[in-house]
Image (cartoon, rainbow, N blue to C red; front, top):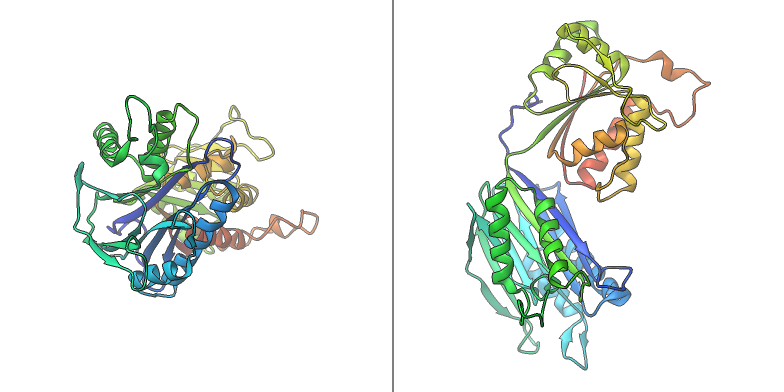
Length: 398
């Protein structure tokens, strides 16, 4: 296994923000993203259903799900788009498709294909400049003249950002003196340029949220349409190391402490025994932090040079629960588990180092059944991070 912290891989961060049309309880746009483990390609699709509300949500969800299924089965992206359009019905009155979409397929080398159908044109920012790639227009066979897909093939590099959005963004503010024809792509481009100038390292999640917030503001805080924005950002990975459990052999204690001390990123220690080992090996003190709201979880602690120190199995179990039930991770609870989740949300590559020495306390039959063995909880967290949040996870048992 490659030592933790030695990889120079460019990380692909994908973030999305959405707002429902005023008065609706669901969004008529759907965004899905997935990492294909077979070829390490990143797949993303943004679909906008016709109209708004439940009907639009069903149409966009169906379209996005079809696209993701095709792409996960390694169907060529252009053929997938054509199959979707041949399946989608058309509105007989307005003679338009029931859903529009943008598909993006990015491999580990940055080779990218983007296929668009009736969605606003995507933006590509490179070194703070909006690049306008060439697009091939393909008329679908046996279809009305306006059923045209646009195909872009390009090479992405570290620092590049792709911005996808629904027409709720570029048509926001339409009819106002400032935006008689809407915000349009030029307005979105200028806004993004300003955000990157102020904060060159702004995350995909934060940039998408800024764009959506501005679109809502353009509509005087009463959105006239569903608003969705997704950002794909290639950058240096932000690393996080989570250690839990003492090593199987005492001889590995020094290795554990050295890994924590020299890790090129943020570090978290989960477990009283684990923290004692690291404090002893590094000749540092442990200070219990009693001032932080803790709820039902044991309090966190502090060790110089470590970003966060918490209790072990109970806190990790709460982390797994948050990851499973709070997909946006926007408002984690104000407790040690929530603090771990905040750091996970800010990170791209999560290294999990798990000690395999049996902790006799966890074998006590009088303890609650939900107190799972540490390794099983860690494996669940690793699965959720990879499958649900597209994080790169490395798991090491010591």
